[in-house]
Image (tube, rainbow, N blue to C red; front, side, top):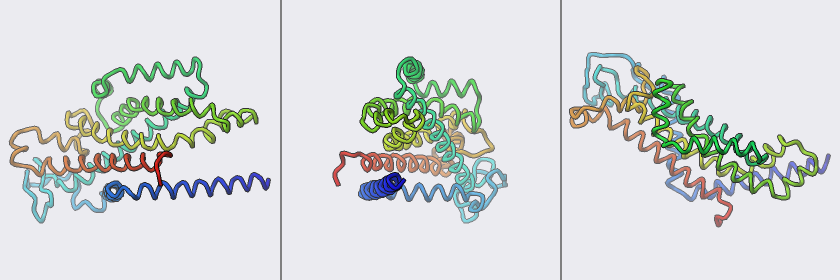
Length: 295
């Protein structure tokens, strides 16, 4: 009992020192630190949208396509809705789609990758052939076809993107498991009679967290772009619910593009900054977690 307690304490101290080392390495990337603060700021704004927004995002006024003013900070759209309020709610929706899709695709990919890599054999063959089949289709074409079949809508888009994105995580985790299952600590756990569930989730999974986190950031950024693309094409989240994609959908005419910039520039800038920030954080996280990186 004392041995187990001492071992647990040593593990906690090791994890604490590893976390501090990763945080220190991450802190060297100043652009990533600024990006992380920006993402936190935008997340807070999105969560507090009902409190911060000066107007109901769906409330129609008599000011049609009016430019930015003291009354409407970012102007109004074609039917008089306040653009600042709609952008707050749109950011909320887009971040939620990105987060939910990332969670779904990562969880599914990690579980299937663990199973395929650890057990091998026919299970590995079946999972990998399904993965190869999904990845053989052009990504955006698969998303568009699925959206056309199942229809637009918030949860439909989340499930479609989650289904399309999990194969990458599965292949990544499977590759890590194939090397980890031959290590001494995994073989020792097998000899000790530990159940497969314990070996998978307590011994192998913690050693794949780093690459999975980095991969998840890329999925997050890609999902925000995918939601914007689907919304722009009218196949994403449907009005009157605001999303960054369907706000851009209203900027299809030359008149709006050239003379009514407030209807599309703010949404485009937010998408660009969100994606860039997530990618900067992901790159810094990759360097911080890399065991070969120098102190």
